Image (cartoon, rainbow, N blue to C red; front, side, top):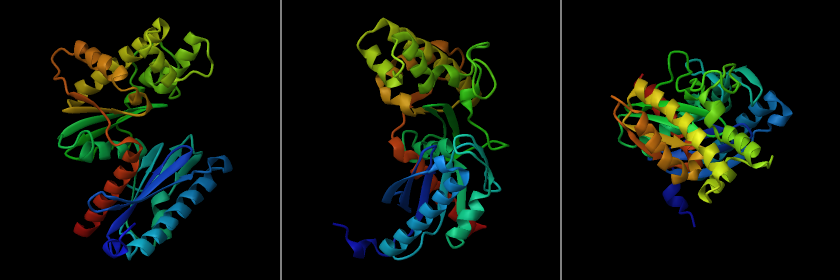
Length: 319
């Protein structure tokens, strides 16, 4: 049973991780303790305005829970969203899977939450922030976080912070061309890493090789473990492409730790054993970083949004 006397007057922030179909949220203490967790659908089937309303309503609900349970309102909020962002202005510029464009999300949330500081960040970069600071990369001065899921994206960590890039689009490692003239990618190029090594790409390849249109990447990994030569071939192509993309990233960034997360990383050593070998075989002068699985699971996005909120609050206080 919760000791309400101990929880009363707990300083906390709101953390929201907005995905394509669902939202994960938390109230997070200054020591990154998850004080409260909740989930809601984005309601994207009702259109982009409904998604924005759902985010604002969810945030307001979290504020009320914090006031009731912890003796006061949250001191800040952090929100991770997909797509293209202008983090300086706090604007969600575009997200194909949510259907919105040029949404002044920070201003809307600040107003709805009573004027508290609000930080807006990219969802993958938020996951990378948490993994690099308190997860698999804790203690590393420089790290590269790569999420290999339906798509592939990354986050560049330096001294415990994520570098968003000059235009807010750093870390798009999924759109490095690793097979010129290869499969078409949604970005308009051909042969991108995402088109060859994402979980979606593996699922498509294995569905074709196995003759099962419902097969996905997890099914392919299972078949690899059972020794199916068709699956081994599909998996091998993925590992080869992924290693080529990662080596490009390592060559440019020289991280001390490479953290791999996302749905494909759930295959464990079925992925990591051949991937470590393939990366090492491709290196010449580069230093091999530690290649490790993400440690925080699906809480990483929320934890990263919470860390971003605490960082924003610290900036406001010292400004």
